Length: 214
Length: 291
Picture 1 (cartoon, helix red, strand yellow):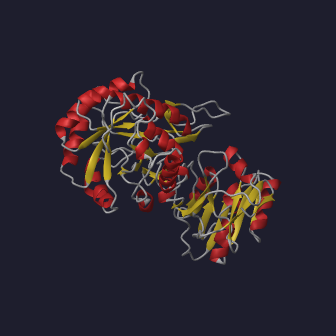
Picture 2 (tube, each protein chain N blue to C red; picture 1 turned 90 degrees about the horizontal axis):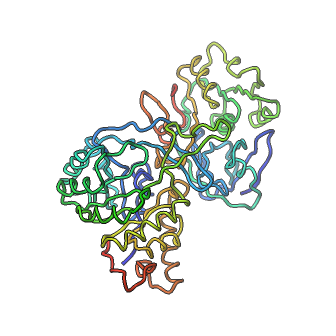
Picture 3 (tube, helix red, strand yellow; picture 1 turned 90 degrees about the vertical axis):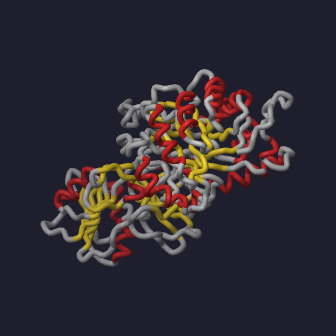
């Protein structure tokens, strides 16, 4: 554990990389949540030299324990896991809502181009936009989908389910990063299934980035 | 002689994590049923203070696809394979055992007699074991539920019916409510409770069954350290299985294996296997056969 930095309502966890690869944008890691039985899935936010950084929203006992970590603490980290974004895109447009901003900085950095649209529920949450310089930002009651142009190009999105559904309605071929409760993150528990292509599939193995919807 | 470490059925998919499966002495498949099952709708898992609940509902491709596609791929892992089977009648279990009999990749069939997340077969465990025994010459393990008043009685009944070993224990039914809505967290309501809270329950079951029958026992329930494993062995288990711990720590078997020996040595035994049954008064405890 290197450091914890508050970024608005969120916390950026900076962890020593050790022998772990950062993986590709949209992939995730399982982070041990101190004092809890199960680890928590977090997509990689940034990959500074020698570090892995995760943006965490302290919404429950596990994420609060992660945000309470201090420099020098050690946690178990397992990954990278799952399938990230397909980076072979012509005109990338990054769209994120709330904590869905988490994978976007690493995605933007890897792509090296493309613009970004971000939506947050409060000005304090919107401070996370600092991680993605140049992004267009809206705060509720305005919604990020209002910013989508008529021809949005290749949309790569992450956010709450209603937002992803709304994005998909406007951009049927969008790559969408979904979320589900996970116990293991590597296909062992069958806990994270979502209905995709007409059947229940493990999001950790089939996703978390899926083309089209659930 | 060592104490083999297995995975608890349903707690590992060797096809998505081959290198994890290869840390085990035996890989036990997720339960296979006669027909494909999509499983229960999500949410399927919930963390609680002292364990976790799951309600997967025996999601599996069905025996046909399992034999054609899954089993050949599992065989390539180079780890001995146990196949867990489940059904909704005596005939289901017999059919599954018959179909698996011809497959040399399979060393043992584990009869899942106790999934808390599906409606169970109406027949007793002993009736199912008897039908399975008739259907296959393969080694048969009966996986029992801890939610029974006298598990030793069930153990004697399945032993008499021809079981070659016991897997103890399955999860126990539990319920979690969402803190704000007070509605069940899991879509299906209750689920199977596993993790640390199951440990003393599993220990009691192994302890009771070890004196009731002379069968090898795979002990499982909340094991996450060598000391936990050693306790099950002392209670009478010949092998231990890891379940929930694999979700948080995929390679836990390596650590537990080392810790088990360390714990045994610290207690003055040459190995973990050497302290098998030590929880019982040695005069009355019969030596257990090896796994």
